[in-house]
Image (tube, rainbow, N blue to C red):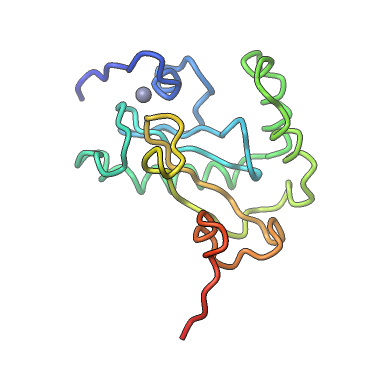
Length: 168
Ligand SMILES: [Zn+2]
């Protein structure tokens, strides 16, 4: 395996080098971390070790390791005590200068101790799709019964107002 040069000032390259949030999963091509701004308990990110912005630029080795990473991080999510995770996250030194509201919010959710009922999986592949850091991070978002009023349409809701459709 060739040495990977981290890109300067890229937060996810720092993570890969062990200088950011601790990883909870790793294989040959990817690492997994829990997002410190969780939108739901267990919100995780799958990050290629190589600094690559788009899922369409993954190489053959990364393709081969991708589903192992998705499944591996799912296993970690389902065997992690979420209450303990977020309490520990709040106490991390790195967390002291960051906003804590998302962590405090998930700690209050009534389904915090439940096993996920479903998952939303995806990435914002490009600035226009909402990407904020140009290093691929695939989102593995556990979903829980009742986490939104109506889950109908799912990821279609990224275009507000055009999510609902009638099946013919
Ligand atoms: Zn990077």
